[in-house]
Amino acid sequence: MRAFAFHQKFALRRERLALMIRCIAEGEATSEDAVATYMGVNPYMVEGFRGWLCKTGLGHANTHTYYLSALGQLIATHDPRLERNETQWLLHYALVNTADEHAEMWYRFTNEFASIGMQFTSTMLQSYITQAVPELPTNTSAIASDVKEVLKSYTHPDALGGLGFVQKLDKSTYQIVEVAPPPPAIVGYLLFDSWARRYPSVDTLRIAQVCSEPEMPGRVLFTSRGAIIQSLRDLQARGLVTIADTQQEPVTRRFHAAPLQLLLDYYTRL
Image (tube, rainbow, N blue to C red; front, top):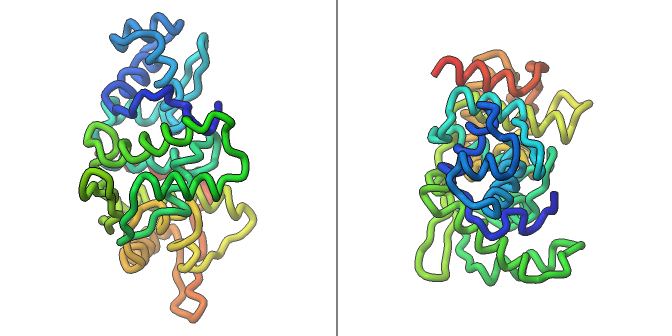
């Protein structure tokens, strides 16, 4: 699926995305028309929400075939309306990493452009993308469309606005603010998932890497270094990592199971 304009200009709305995953989970997603009927929308909107389904890591789909990912199955079972704050962090994380699908604007916005305390406009974000991305779509309107959608997704309460790290100051100005991290199990999932993909053969990272490298918790969660360290200490108390108090501040991985297991254990206890 393409990296830009995958949403067909349909804004992310968790209520509609939740309808799609429930339709798939119940075995009703037999065709595009069947999904449209279940969701109560027209088939063109279904095409847009197929994009959101894939980019948020919940599933995979084309015109004729729909299925949930392992994450999508877990969420469909334990948070089928996508209401929990923890679930919204997971959708955000899927949008901003390169594990499977690639939402270019969301990745660049989170991992490169945004930083705590900065103020910016949509024009500044679009200018950054046009300079930073080596292979832009020939249709430049797709870039403007994604700038609009990324800002809507992080400010609208029906999307991911509840995460709170993007605040709209006025008609054209936004600010990135520090927020509290999610529960340790969610931080652990983000940490071990990004660790396994980016450093599969390395068992020790530095705290600085966890706090600042692309797709790592410090970049994705827009929280302070101190809060990330506290989350790491919470994970250490659970025997999942060890942290050595040395100059290099090494974090050693003790958890080697599938990262999704942390989510399964967490959601089943809710």
